Image (cartoon, rainbow over the protein chains, first blue to last red):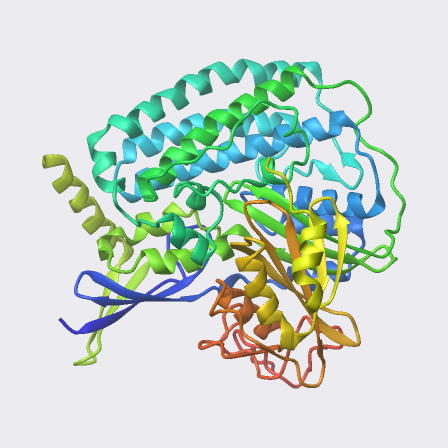
Length: 393
Length: 158
């Protein structure tokens, strides 16, 4: 079989933002993958240099629509460290609650998408219904479902009332029960096992070699988690543990994310029950002294790093953002090699890329230069047909 | 949490590469030079057990362009290796042979115009393909040139 180049993207209904893959395939097997992530470059780092801290925060929150709280917290805690501010414990706890709810909604979203990618739409509907409980809690606390706007330099902008705390606590038992159900399904549902096991495998050595982060790394037994490596917010006080797995495939990544859902729920419950009294913010100076900070944060997708340099004014000299997805691309390109074309959606989705993707795939034969198109629906259909074949086994 | 790296040990291992300072309990900063940085990273991978590259940050400080390699390992201490490059010939050896640095180097090449000698695939990744050459938007002295076309759809003005 001659090798063919298959461009996927930049638009793809399975993912949230645009990215372009050039998949070089030999028959159904993937030989190599090239990547173009330029479609969503908005120049936020440059724009952040022109704005003062108060105006940078909402801008950075809009780096991402799913882990919005991650970016604003990473930046706020960096600037606070440069200013040498002590943030009141109540603010730390509220930040932690929002951060962990965000992780829960993000992991549930991912689980739903993964179920959808393999054609298991019932599971997708169930999970996204349960995700609404998390979204409702976030909306009650912050007034928003996407950009919570909770952070400001020196603390948080909104306090939690006892009613909000109660409403959140009331939702937790049901969520806990549902997560238990999903743990059971992932471990015992034959169709999930067939489509997830052995797909997109990365060994521990490969993870370290290609620099994968977050659940992708932890699923291969690499226990880097910034919440315990470099503790911030209230993670030192709350009871939780780093979830790892040794499978290293999509199945392992699912196990890790479900395990993290359970841990996040524990953290949220602890923080809601032990919410300290006191102020929620401190008064901050307008300008930050000259300094440099490397602020690390465990976002739902892995380690997020903000390199911040200040120059003694009310603006940053430089902010360099390294998002977890950027670190994970190298490993995706490697673990797709020798896999089946129909597994692209689930493997790419398995790192939970925070970028988007494809509605039309052009199959181009390098030898006779004839081009034809496969729509995303066709690729989905193939993916689903595999699922049905798997089900019959 | 595991115990961090002892700063004395780092001082001992890395002293030939430049000045070493501990800027926080779990952050060590080493200022070195472009010709020594490859060896320094190799040494920290072997002796300091730094098996992980967090990121390569780049910054323009007005006089020079700076690159900061952030490494960590099972000890969870972040080692930051800083090098400065002259603005007129910003060149440095690639780390893609020993670190998963390819994607970061391509990004920095796009935005700062730093050339990584030996990187096999230094093509555009973060800027659009029709972005003009020799325009590096994150440099401090960069201003968009109204006469140039920066990509996207050309607007017909009547």
